[in-house]
Amino acid sequence: MTAVIWTDVVQMCLYVFGAVLSLIVILGKIPGGWPHASGRGGSGAQVRDLRLSLRSTMEFLARPYTFWPELWALLS
Image (cartoon, rainbow, N blue to C red; front, side):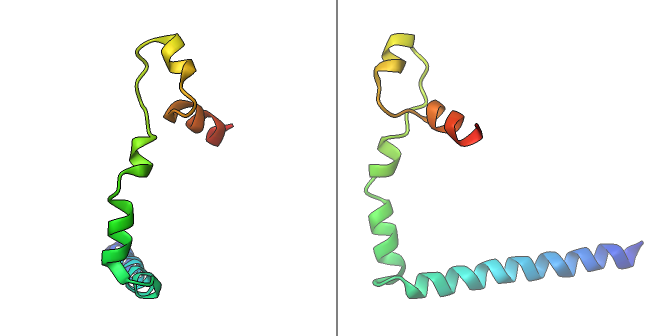
């Protein structure tokens, strides 16, 4: 039984190492590196359009883009 657990531990370490290595390689391919990527994402343009409120039905339906219709479209 312990052999199975250690096999899982080694496999998980390989997954984590692969993910970290992939992130480093991908960030190395971005022109400007991590500062450029984080600067573009930090502008808040993407997060600004994420609206989670369900206050009023008419107000909710009047907004063009909310989280819930996007989730519904993704799941259907």
